[in-house]
Amino acid sequence: MPAWLVVVLTLTAVVWVAPLAHAEPDTSQVNSFIAELNKRGADYSTREAVVNAGELICTELRDGQSVAAVISAVKSGGFSSRDTGILMGASAGAFCPDQLPTLQRFIDNNS
Figure 1 (spheres, helix red, strand yellow):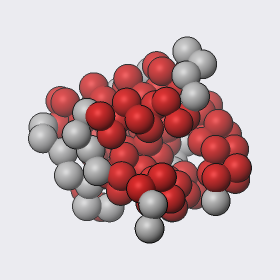
Figure 2 (cartoon, helix red, strand yellow):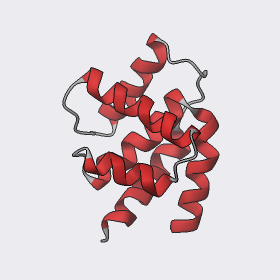
Figure 3 (cartoon, helix red, strand yellow):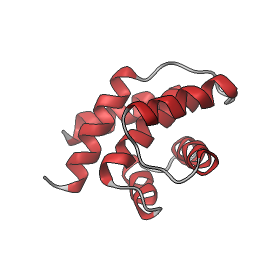
Figure 4 (spheres, helix red, strand yellow):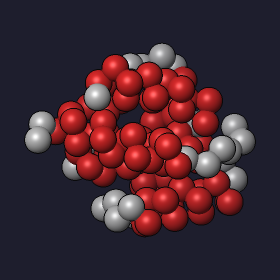
């Protein structure tokens, strides 16, 4: 299975169940984000590093970077295709729910 398809399929699963959140991450959002990563078995080095990555994903999406470019950046940071999809969906669900439609459009156009 191509790596991009793994990202799309994993992202699809996470976006469908992503909780809504406020614009500013707080402790409950961070905890929800980490819980989602752990529930889905995502591999990450440290809590701080993955939270920073999640917040950066939202910043890049809000700054107009394409989903494909953000996926590429996350993967170049050492995440597998599967974990990239999980991280993208969990980040949007916890830190930038306003970007869920952007991710959904990407999924719809690539699945």
